Length: 215
Image 1 (cartoon, rainbow, N blue to C red):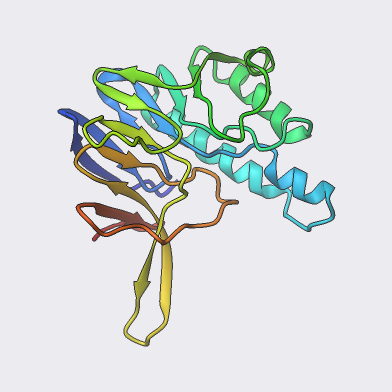
Image 2: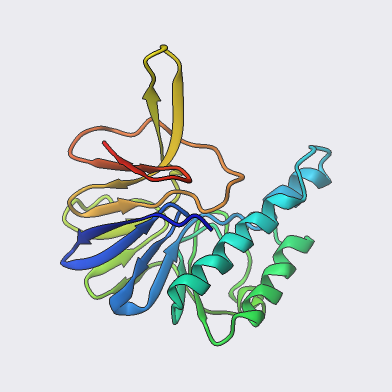
């Protein structure tokens, strides 16, 4: 894994952004990610859309590499863990959680997480909540409407469009960081990028396999 990191101070806490679409919070031994969308690729294939079977494998391998690198006690998924529950990809995640015991998996529900808490607990998710506050930081799937609330969220699948000298453009995933809010990139590679982000009072931490690029 070609892991690149970028240190960030947020809400008086030291966080580590990674180019693998996750944040590590050392003081809490917590790996933070969002929008894994388990089962999405299989759901598309079931409906006749040719999506490679390796999509889910790559996402889980990336998550495993992050676990091996940071050795977190807990993994917090900030919404949209599951896109469609009744397929093989979801049950492979159950095996994944079991394999990485005693790491604790926590879920803040997203708009796609429509399955029951019982089902999620059977997968191995130890805690399922609508929002979670840790040491002054609120974790919610969607951005907060309260500008004073310190929030880490997902949902948007943020990206940035970079105009190249040849007038072509390049789109990259990014973390969108404001004074009191971080929007996480979608963890799954099988998601689009929303490049319609406001430039007002935010910093974009874009990344690829090689480095971070700050705008």
